[in-house]
Length: 493
Image (cartoon, rainbow, N blue to C red; front, side):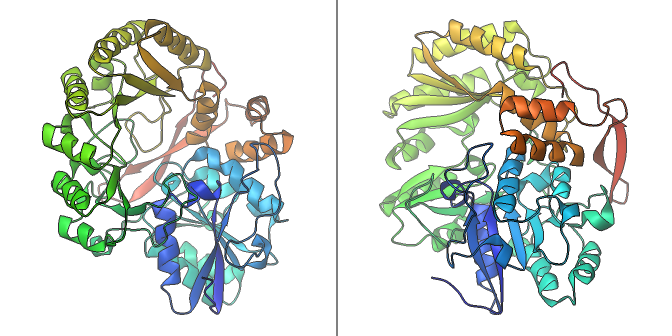
């Protein structure tokens, strides 16, 4: 139902409805805004028919069928780098300049936040007037209050530039503040809306924890990020799940590490609910846990092997070892789960063809226990991780190793992979800044094909003069910016 309030903003998601409405972070901000007595928001999504390079029909809000240009504020939740294209498409389809520098007081203030701000939000500075860094559970509403109450746009941006954890490119340049951490009493986030038209159809989403206690070297949400793992008590989780919820999604970076996760799943199953978990660690898949997952409706047991060999997993600081994965396969078979699905990265720093061969031999061994499917993604180094700055392995290298793995597993396991080309695009943006973001805009205008991105990236300022920025911590704990040279990879990154 549409809420009427004196101040109404657009809450935008730069992917289609089915994706945006499966984002618990997006739904949490929606809930927080709608709970304000004199504030409301209307949801806006990327057109379902928008291809990677097309400017689709002007997006309209879900509640009031309003265009983005009719709101005083448009707030985007951006999950990862490739959604920058969707943000550009939505703004330009609405008749708004996508570039921050091309807008003025006649236009809505563009705010951005979301998971991308934990890693490298600098590309957002090309398009957003304001970036809310980190956990925005309450911070976002505080930002919207300033935008509502300020005398004019300039006054609002000046005031916001003085707020902790708020990045205002016009004032800060590329000196980004630290990420926010919400008060633990506000946990957990949970979804106020259930809908069948999503990736997680009719599922009630709720956090069981936030953050992670592990130290995986490739992961933004490792134990040193925002206080590590913060656990929501089992009683609180169960209390918030509606009695009529037939499907429940337990969400978090390390859900299976919750000390009471088995009891939570068993309690929900006893209510008659199906249960899905956003992450399963192989070393946690013991007999009772897998039995609970089977009772919750699991037909495929999904976990991560991450690296192609134990040696590569050491580089990634992963606890998962071959014995954990073998045990997971045995538990799947014992409890009648039809398939074991494993996530794997190729192109990890230090990886060799021998590691890939070891992976093929090991997965072949697993396939004799239970049918196995591999889902493979090329490794992409992210800012604010120990592997930040590691080069992209190369499109040709990743494709060659993928082909080697497929040949080694032919007839033994189903192997599916995301594109190495688009992973390279993600890598350039993950390590880039405003010039790379503006190159995305050029690529979208040219048609949005991979060749358009490659051409636009190659046209950036000379790589011999471009620097890469990263955050370090002083003894006082304040983030400050440093520079070092960004060396291009063989693939042009």
